[in-house]
Every structure is written in structure tokens, then in C-alpha cells.
Image (cartoon, rainbow, N blue to C red):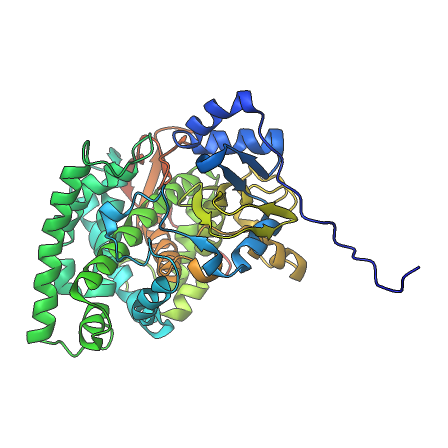
Length: 466
């Protein structure tokens, strides 16, 4: 007989394994129709399962508790520069997005100060002003009630905002040119089949366009050295004057921040407009709350600041509910560099760990009636609910590798949604939620076609409660 305490934790086990005969079609669909494939895996095997073999062995993770443990593990136990990382051709080999520790930490630390709370607050008026300019152009260029695909407008608006916020107004004047040059990269990563590092297909065009972008950035770097602005909020100037990165490393971080900062945000904004429009009465309430917080259009505006952002709580809840159902990426890979354990499962070194914000956002234990769009589920949750939601709401990841621009993206989505709802009446061309499209970036298929007209006094009701 022993007095040693009994270990109440069972030994880790291997995740449920997908049947061999099902694996070829599932793996193929995982990289062409990830949402449907993930849902099918979850229904049959649960939110954690294993498939593949040898160098193609992978574990899909969508359980919030398992994800919490995964994100808490040291980043040194994983690799991001692995055989399935196709981003070097787009963002460069010195991008923080594609580097392992400790190099990732060094690169990220150089950029992190660009996303301080003080900087974020300073960008709020600029976001509202640029949104107004985009709306002005939309209404001036189309007859009331015209059918317009809003996706190009959302792309250009979010690109201008991230360029202006991080690199200054002068740099933002070239946002359109940069967006055109980034189109080949977007097509490369949005391919229905996995991108590849081989020098054919879209790659030559991607490399040529990236070289042209580098020329633009090099000119900006040279200008900051010879004619510094002295602007303490200019991220590019900080990177140049601090001299912590080489010019090549600066270029790769700039491309990373622009590409990740506008592509995923514009996709999330597209989903947010669809969901808000298709939710009965929500668009009117969003416009009314914006009137109350920002001041009615045509009157002296209220200050657009941190207090205004916090008061737009309905737009914030709408954004959060949209990202729960439509996170920027359905799946995100990292490779286990060592044997690891999380969620009660043992995962061998060399396994691709594919974690899914899509599955976590549909966890029925956290989100009652998970397929239902309901922004009110984020209103005043209990402490237990808030803890569970924090673990399961992971559109930007968690831990040391979470999206560096998550706060800017949330701020943009909230402010742009509120301002568009305040100034424009949208009528959907379909009453059905679009199918998702894309593997790396999740967009609504078919764009955002809407009938557009200006919001007038006859559309204005009682301001929503705050």
C-alpha cells in the first residue's frame, strides 16, 4: 500500500484517427473547401482528430479547451518555417509571419510599439474621415438604388487606412498602386489548391510585383533618412531611425503589415455587412446608434475618439459575432518541433497542428445555437460565459503569435460598420448568407452586391440605447 497521491489526470492519448479510406478526399477538400471539410470532420470525429501519415501527418484542433492549452505552450515547441509555409514568396523570408523563435520575437518586438494604445486612439478620426470619403465617392458615382459590388470599395478603404495609420498620409497616396501590385499575391494565396514554392504558375508575377513594391518602400525608407518627419506615430520612421532592422527586414515587415492588415480586414468587413443587412432590424439600429454617438450627418460632428468607439457597442457586438462565424482564416498551421501535449492528447514531433477558429467559433458548449447570428450573446455575459467566450473566440489567435494588428482591425470594423450604416441604406441582392470562399483568407463568395442609396431623414428613427 502506498501513501502517494493518485494522479487524477489520465495519460495523454492520440487524437481520434480519421479512417484511411476517407482521408484522400478529406485532405483534398481541407485545402479547397476548408469550412465544409472541417464541419464534416467535427461531426464524425469531434473537434480534435488526426489524419495523414509520415511527413503529411496532421492534427486538426477546434476544441476551445485544447486550443487554450495549445496557445499557452512555448512558441519554441513549434515551427512556422515548415514545408507547407508558402508565404515567403509573398512576404519575404525575414517576415515575422514566417520566422520561428527567437527570430520572430526580435522582428515582432521592432514593430510592436507601432500598435500602442496611444497610437490606436490617434487613428480613430482618420478612420472615420476616410470612411466618409469612400462613402462620398460611392454615392456620387451611382444612382440611388443602383446595384453595386461593395467589395472593391472595402478593399481600397481598408488598404488606405492601414497605409495611413502605419506609414503616414503620403505613403497612403500610393495605396491604390500598392493594391494593384498586391493583386497577384492575393490570387496566389487565394488559390483553391494549395500554393506551392515552385517557380512556375503565378510565382514569377508575384515576385515581379513584390520587386515593384520594394522599390516604393525603398524610396520611403530613403526619404525618412534624408527628410525625417519627426512624427512619433510614424511606424516606418521609427523602424528606420531605431536601426534595429536591415532595410530588407524593414521591407518584409511593411509588406506583412500591409498585406495582413487590409486583406483579412476587408474580408471580415464584407462578412460584417452581409450579416448586419440580413439580420432583421439590425441595420437601422446600427445607424441610429451612430447618430447618437457620432452626431447626425450634416451637423457638427461629435468627437471621434476612444469614448465614441466604446459607445458604439452594437457595432462592436456585431463585429464580434461576425468574426465568430467568419474568422479571417478557417485553419492555421504550425508544425510541432517537439512532442507536445494539449487537451489530453499527445502529438508527435513533425506533426502539422492545424488549429481552427472556424470550429472554435461553433463550439455548442460555448455558443448556444451556434449557427444563429446573434450579436446580443456578447451583451453582459456572466463571468463564466466571458471566460468561455474568450477561449473560444479566436479569430486573431492567442498567445505569443496572435495577430499583431488585431486591435486596429477591430477598431476599423466597428467604426466603418457604424459609419456606413449611418449614411447608407443597403438592400441585399440575396436573402441567403453567401458561401465562404478562400483557404488563407475567408471571403463571401460572389463579393458584396447590394442596392445602395443614401440614408435620409425619413430613414432615421429613435437612436438606439447605448
